[in-house]
Length: 354
Image: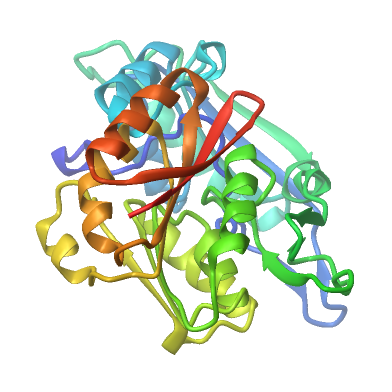
C-alpha cells in the first residue's frame, strides 16, 4: 500500500449522508430508477482502515463511509476540543471499525463486489505488520428509501420568530402571511433551523437586520443565517466556515433562495489562525453572527469586535449552558455589551452590541 494513502480519507465520527456517491442507473426506454442497493461492509481495526479503504479504491469505489472505534473517535475529538463542547460518548465510534460503500443492486455491480472481496483476500494473505482484524466482508441488500429518503421525514416546515418560514427544499408550499420563505437542503453542513441554537439565532437576527445591511456569518455551516439575513433585507452577506463542504452547501442554499452572487460570498478557512483569511474579511459590518461553540466564540471575540461597526449587533450561539458565564465574560472583555439572552433546552444564545 502506498504511503500516500495514510490520512487521505476523511474520518467519519457519526453519520455522513453522501448525496452524490450513488450512481442512479436508468433504463433509457422507461426512465426508471433502481431502488435497491448493495451495502459492502468490511470489518477491520483502526490500524487497518487505510488498507481496507485502498482496497475499495482499487475496486473503483473511492467514496466510502469510514467508522472508527470509540477510542480513536474520542481521541480525534479531544485533540480538537476547541471546536466542540460535548458529544454523547456512547454514540461516538463503533465497537468494530469498518469501511462501507454502496453500489446499485444490478448485475453490472457484481464484478465490483468481487473485486472488493479479492482485494480483501489479498490483505488477509499479506504480512501487514499490524493487526487488521477479521477483514470479514458483509454484503447487505437494502432499499434506497431505507436511508436516502426516510431522513426527510424528520424535517418539517418551521415557523421561526415572527417573520421566517423555513421550508425543506423538497416541499412546495406558500409561506403563511407576513412570513419570508427560507428554503434549505439540510445536506451535510450544520444549520437547518431544527436545532435550538440555530432557531434562537434566527429569532434574534430578524429583530436586528435592516434593509441595506452588510452581514458577516462566522461558522456559516449551511449558510442559513447569512441567507436569512439577505432575505430579511440585508444588501450583502459574507459567510465563513472552516469546513470546505460548507462552501458548496451555502452557495447552493443561497441560489435556491434567489440570492445572487453579487449579494453573497463564501470564504473557507480557520479564522482563528489564518491571517490571510482574517485580512480578507473586511471590517465595519452592520450585523455579525457566530453560531459555533463556546471555545471558538471565546477565542473569536476580539476579532469579531474588529469586524463590527460601533454599536453593531453581534449574535452568538452554540453555547451549552454550563459555559454561559465563561462566554459572557470573554465577550465583555472584548468590548461587547450584552443586550439579550435566550435559553432553550440547555443551549444559550446572546445578542450583544459592539
